[in-house]
Amino acid sequence: MDESQKPLLIKRYASRRLYNTETSDYVTLDDIAAFIREGREVQIVDLKSGDDLTRQYLLQIIADHESRGENMLPVSVLNDIVRSYTNQATQMMPEFLQASFDMLREGQEKMMKNMGTISPMAKVPGFEALQAQQEAFLKAMTGGFGGGAAATKPEAAAPKGDSPDDLDDIKAELAALQAKLSKMGK
Image (cartoon, rainbow, N blue to C red):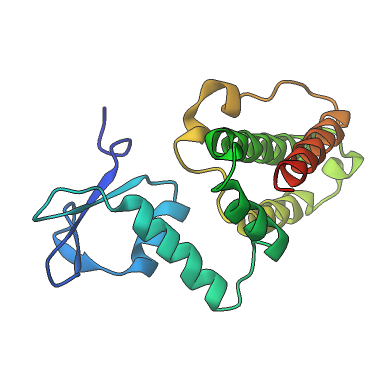
């Protein structure tokens, strides 16, 4: 496994400071969030006990963004997640969420691919610059869903179809999964 595929090891000292073992310097939660947005996996461990603290810190990053008004998670979704901890959905929720993000990532990849291949505007001067702006905008809006472990799976990386209707199919599947999740929370 080459260096870029290994998780970036962050050690937490007793003082709660976070230490990047690759660059030998201290980092903040914002730095860790930036690494993740760049597509890097991270692993945060307690130096003394060796406990894996990654989940705890990732949840803290999400909470920090939400508390700063960068609301991505609707209250209804948060309620559904809380409800899922107290019923049978606890076992299937992680798989459902992973499948939903995989579908979103796949839809994003298809849309990016189709932007340049089916548009008659592709021959207009300056279209490539406009397309680059659109791609950057979509990447910013999706918060880097293209990075991470799931994006390296062959089935998530390879588009299954070339038709513009595929995006509509993906949207319909996502809506159906969201409806199922809502029913499970009741």
